[in-house]
Length: 339
Image (cartoon, rainbow, N blue to C red; front, side, top):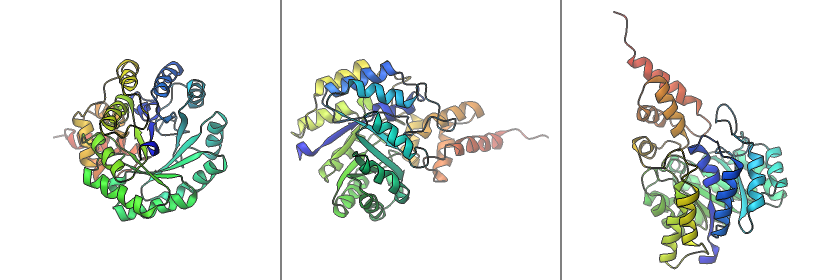
């Protein structure tokens, strides 16, 4: 079991949401090198919304993502260079370009009920000789049985692993356990887990996922990811070491990355503040946080009200434009009427 665990650090992809996609090549090189030295098995690098995500809707990257991927490739010696792709945002050509630059792993992400849109990208990843993970995002919105049915589709397309992806950080421990168990029972391929800490359950949920047989495990140094952040890599490593399940991670080196390299890049620490807590409480996509904060400031409304309404409407990744609409509507309800 210990040797089967594969830890993917997503700081240089999920963390892109935190800093509004403003990574520099120097920052990517520094953090990627530190993670590689610490024994992380995969290091994910791309725009927060995956390949092709740099846009007005999702946020423009400061540096072209392919330059960031090339930079990471130049410093990684052991870890596999990993990218994320959301069909409808990233294209087949984007994936081919990332592969040409040395990406060895791709995770193809869809909403938890839309696995069928991933077929061509998962198949292409296999054709390109890459390891392929399927990402079923917003997993709390599907029952374990329905999620397993979607996972079987991704497996049939060629995925080496399929993830329970807690994009909203909304899963309780039992919810995470039930979904990972359902996938493990339904699949022959490996199972993964990607957690967010909006309810302060990321590490607990990740440990439960491992207990239930998940072997592709996502984490981020210092929790550097959307919302209240991801499962913290250094914390997970320390706990796994205490449990005798450390898959080769250097706990102290991960502590150093988390304390010395990541904080200077962050605009503010990931924390469970009232807006981030609302994400988990209302089941809202974690990357909506920064968008909601900007809209709240622009329209003079509470970010929690925006997120609550977005959650009520069951918005999913790719519907960031709904945030502006909701904020405007809330502001109009508050606007004084003419007497």
